[in-house]
Image 1 (tube, rainbow, N blue to C red):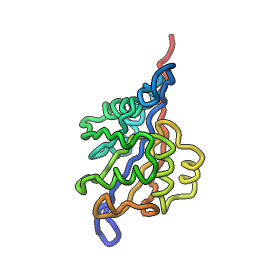
Image 2 (image 1 turned 180 degrees about the vertical axis):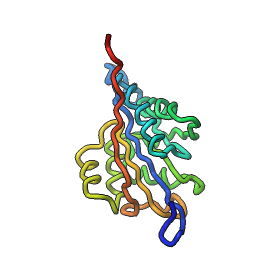
Image 3 (image 1 turned 90 degrees about the vertical axis):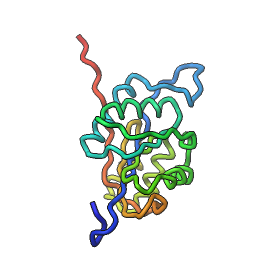
Image 4 (image 1 turned 30 degrees about the horizontal axis):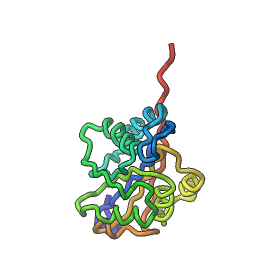
Length: 183
């Protein structure tokens, strides 16, 4: 995809909220693992990204156990997973902090995956999506549930050019894995 007049190719930011986590007693929030539903949904998220031709060139992932688990299960669905950078700043980050981390992405990266947490991810999508169909923004405003994926695109020379209101929300989805058949 190229910009108006055949200019700079579009960059994509793929935002993935971690899959459903468990709440085991006595386990600190940062160390909470994925719940059974999360272990089913995370691979479904990986498949959805592959089917949409949205496998990233680089992934930035929170260090929280549930985010790391989501990344590992999603990436296992791809023939060649991209490099991942675990970044403790993504845990509990607000929009300003998330953008700071994204702005550090090397210019040669065309598609970046951000795996993290709400409310920061939902707020980031809403802040960046300056030009989006009303229905898509309404969906994100209502709820950005676990395993939700939002894809934002914009024309920029590097990642530092991504700013509030500059991106187009091109898609949102909430992939769900199926329960194993009983019998």
